[in-house]
Structures are given as C-alpha cells and as structure tokens.
Length: 282
Image 1: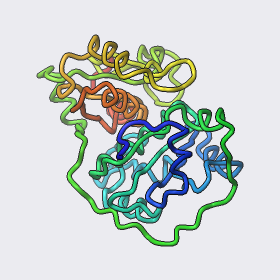
Image 2 (image 1 turned 90 degrees about the vertical axis):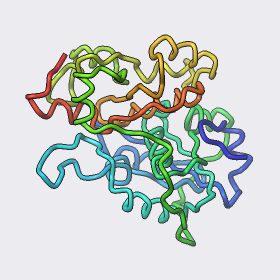
Image 3 (image 1 turned 180 degrees about the vertical axis):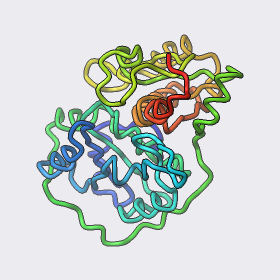
Image 4 (image 1 turned 60 degrees about the horizontal axis):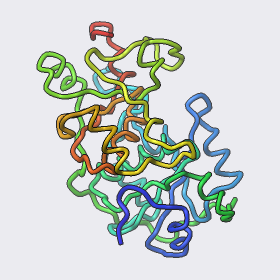
C-alpha cells in the first residue's frame, strides 16, 4: 500500500524495519536555522535522515540575473534528486516526512517529492509529538546509508507559478491566490521576517494552522473539504503562497487530503514579491 498524504505514528512504527520505508526529519526554526539539526542530534525517530530547510530543500536566493528569488526558492531539480539518492531513496521507496511543528516544514519536502514525480510520500500526522505520545523510541544515532538510491525524475505531480505569472494574474484575475501566513502578517502587522508588511493584492488568507486540530493532527478529510470549498471554487484555478513557499505546501497537503486536486504553488511567495518596490502591496 502506498501512502501519499498522511501516515499515522502506529503505521510508521509497524514499518520502521521495512527497508522500503525511509523517514526524513524536517525540524527547523526560521529564527535559528541550526535548531532543527541540534534537536535531531538530541533525539529522532530511529533511522530517520535529516533534511535542512535552507541547504537541502531550497536553492540559491539570488538568480543568475541578480534578482531575488525569495527566502526559500526551489533548488535545481537535478541537485534535489541527488540529495534524495544520498538519503537512499529509490524509485518505489515509501518516504515519510515529519517535524515537531504541525507539519509546517515537513509539508515542503512532501510537496517537493511530488514535484519530481514521487507519489509515495506522506507526512507523519501529528509529527514527533504523535510518535512520542505512543511511547515509541527515539535514537541519537545517525543512520549510515549503505547504498545510494536510484530515484529518477518523473513527470511532476504538482503545478507552480512564477512571479511573472502572478503579476499577469493580477490583471486577468483568473486564479484565486491564497496566503498561508498568520492573519496578522497577512494584514501587514507584526512583520518580523520580510522587509515589507502586507500581502499580494487580491489574495485571500487561510492560515496553515487552521488545517489542524488542537493536538496538531490534520482535520478529517470531510472537515477540510467543507472548509476549503468555502474558500475556493475550483482547486485547479487556485494558487497557494505564504512567506517563502514553505507553509503554502501545508495548504496544498490539506487540499490533497480533502480530495481537492490541482492547486499550484507560487514558490517565491511574499518574500520574492515584496523585494521589488514596483510590485503592488495590499
């Protein structure tokens, strides 16, 4: 059985010795970029590899033409596939990603695996807290990858828009733009990460944490369907964005759980958008 959205802590525990399953720890702290790796060293799910948001899940922030691509632009696909192979991921590996932050960072890797055509990628529902709530073990050992993986690039299971596409959409207004940041940052208040406060004109707001229940697990598919259908009319005409293209992936995962397929990601998101003063701000 292939898991392509969520997997429970119990199911992961049952498959932990399965050589076809690989676990990736995606813990991170935007204010302290090395905190995730430090937490991983103190204890992680046994045999889990570690993915650093800045180094493994993002590429250079400045393009060849000198333009700013956002705080976490997508890496080169070839480089990303090489990283996946270094983790031992094969064509048919079931990948499970997790963090300790409700999935806000792990969802980025889930989306990126789909970006290179790998469908067998799922997020640990409830994250590390769900694992620990079952009194399951942690390890401080760094796993040794005995054999490099053979994963190959396949047709993307995702869609994405460039900043030029988003600018064009401002005029045509054909796609619904949904911002995953907190409501205060969306309104331009308490902005401590990016140099400009506000949002892209015409965007709506769906805070990614609204996809979760109080215990950090995702809401049911039925509840997510009801909530998201009140926000967007047609998922294939919707675009998810956030501050830097990370938590927007959480909303994309929620849409997949709800059975609403086809929404796109604007990877550069607000951090890229606001870097050019000629672009309008709301």
